[in-house]
Image 1 (cartoon, helix red, strand yellow):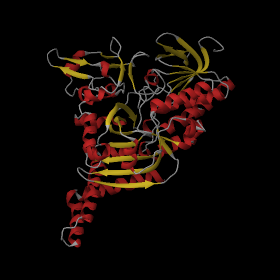
Image 2: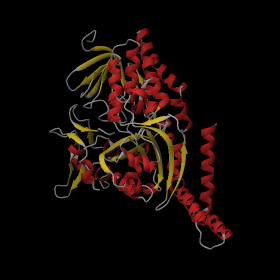
Image 3: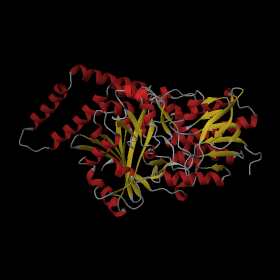
Length: 92
Length: 432
């Protein structure tokens, strides 16, 4: 089963702006490992080779915090979504 | 109504097991406490493997067995060692009530409601963004909309505890000291679960899974039976995931396909997928838990005993001990770090820090010898049973000799000696 189907089982109330931000996009360009793109359990981060930027699909975020710790360049500004926003687990 | 607008005795941030246990203990002794939860309801941002332990839970909720929304009472623990295609399982079965599987979205919500009944002011859908500090003491919290003040703030804001970080109680977490866990709750008919796991309606099974898709990685799998679903998940240390370049859900997909796991979930439909971090650093990585006007409890204090799959119990009891400390502090009108360090003393005297100290060297050993203890010996255990059960017209003596020889040829003798020393050293550190 692919990740999109898994995420489809979740209840999300997405905000209009991202609770995840890259504080220095230049550092992503220099980053070789790009850990965020493969450790995220919701595939929030994708590398866009054309624009040379990380795309953040923040509305899929499970709010686990792994990216914040795994980012080698320490450029992910990780906050909780607003109180009424983000993911809601019913079966956790 | 609060006695004073926006000022209370204690503010607890986070309505998980630690926060609720703390808040309810305070309210029961007549203290005014505000419990702030960022989710739509308590439990809505919370994820764990699957079971709560009866004895510690009873310390907070004496009647929970009959009043709380529990799923199944654990009657069997399986320890399944998975090779690539085979497995060896040890089962311990006893019809008692030592633990129950629960769904956090239901249980935490119930627990927070119990706290409300005891007099706790529960504020949901509210994120605490900052702690307010004045004259070197924490005096309150800043939410998205307003400021709340209190004599004591208790941080039960979970594994990521941005607030503990903000006030310098914890440093950045190393990828070695945290595990990323993903799990699936898979819907299955009650009767199918009963049949496949050999239990009755209200009885359940916990399966701890070693190896499989995690062979050679510092990771463990888990399976819990709920009323009409089965939870299957795994947790892998973050540094291993970073190095392997494989996504956590891919490991879970592989685990689901293992010949020993697949038949148990066959025909099931995915109810919910989720992910969460688990503090795995152990005793040596516990952050500072106390400062002027503030205490840290549960996962926010990295209080987890990973070897025994214990977290919610350490959370509840640390929450309770922080509450007892807060009650004394309030009665003495002293909220200094010195006064609140009573909480640390209580933790040290309890099983919480005693157990964590017992296993203080465990993670170092596992990190340094993971290929041995999380791959080589798992494979050898399965190879032994494969040899022992095979009927192939080869004389048994040859089979035995071949197996014993393989132990010494498949791994360098020097490594075997090092493994023995590592085990002895670890046992020494645990038992002494």
